[in-house]
Length: 305
Image (tube, rainbow, N blue to C red; front, side, top):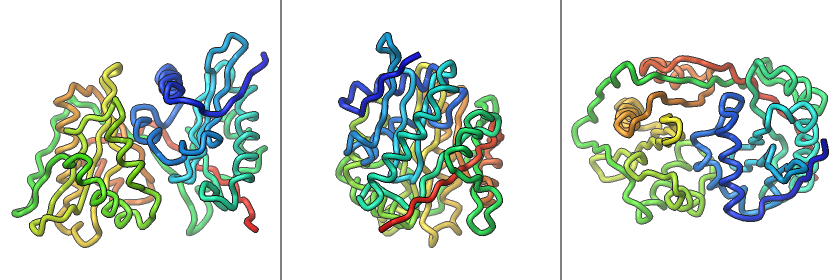
């Protein structure tokens, strides 16, 4: 079967991309939180996004070189995966080389796959990607976790003087961005990106939570995403300033976020995490999240200069 590939061209493409991900949600790591990822500044250059169509003009695959995450997001129709995935990797390789010395480029790119996706793993190896679970200090592996709402969410009240509340809209975006950058020690989060999340049709302000300190500074956050079609939620992202972790604010804001997702009707809630980071992993386990997929991380390096 012949496939036609083109770059991203319009917001309507995101609707098609999201629909394809939902159709095959069990094969992909990111589905519910796509509004967050689709708002990133990677989309500012349409060439960072590839879409593949069949002879009938139906979207069968897409890929995004997600510069903020150093990761390639990919969705592919299972029937086309065997023939098309190597082509997607070749497209990503060309794009990675073209952008190497630009704001969209990186010296390394990562691809996440479920451990059972043996054909994709074989294609990644052929394309020069290396498995990252046994790389010493640079080792990296992940898990996809899920919690059922059959168990009630544990209540964790904020310490005296701290307030859990929704983000105060656009007026507080700059403060949020500064907080995000400080927590993750990167400038990848931008004002434009965060503003776009607020403008996305799937965004629900009441699920966009922050914690305010007694000094009226933002010190933690948790964003929830909810898919009304599947009654599923996802947490992405969650963070707390290092100086305030002794107050267990991550636990406090997560508890409130989960409670609000359940109030919206979520029957199951997902999250992705690095399983070697024991603090975060134990936090999620304490909220009855269980591993449902082991995620293998593959890396390919690109020389600069």
